[in-house]
Image (cartoon, rainbow, N blue to C red):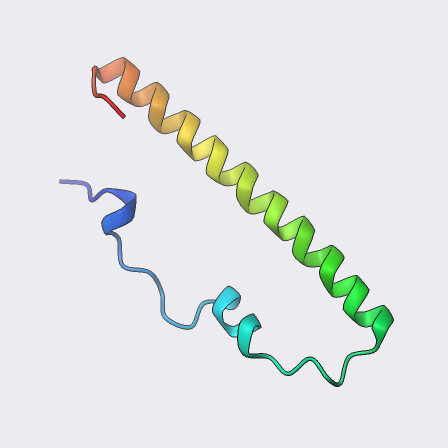
Length: 68
């Protein structure tokens, strides 16, 4: 039996969690601007993956008659 996405254990200490604890004071203004741009790009990538996964699940549910 496949577990639902919400039931899967999440890895401890994943990259996003580690970012929250990183000391930012050594970074210059320019480096912080670059970091923000990279984080925004990563957010867009994660959102696109989430949306693709949701569309895939909805299509499978529609095919097999399951409700969301």
